[in-house]
Image (cartoon, rainbow, N blue to C red; front, side, top):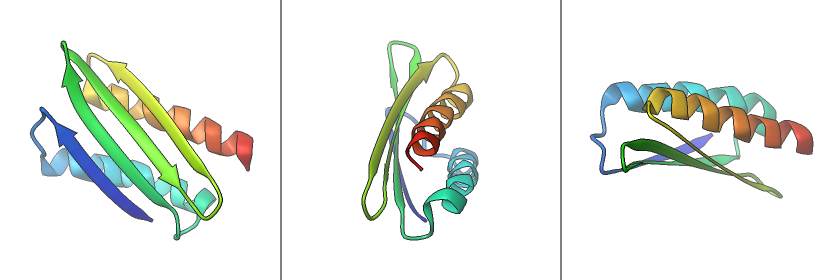
Length: 89
């Protein structure tokens, strides 16, 4: 799976990058290797926000989540996108 990660108003660290990539790999089993995923993470008024765009041959899925902790936000947005994909497949 092709995974693009963008950070706005955040430091791009290797730990965050690895966390996102490891979580994204779980969706590869469902979507297949031809799918692509784009993560956008940013801070807005002390809220950590993450948005995920997943596209494969026929479908596009979008999810957004926010909380006070970036790791918690990543878990929330991944749960949302997983639920969308499971409902569709």
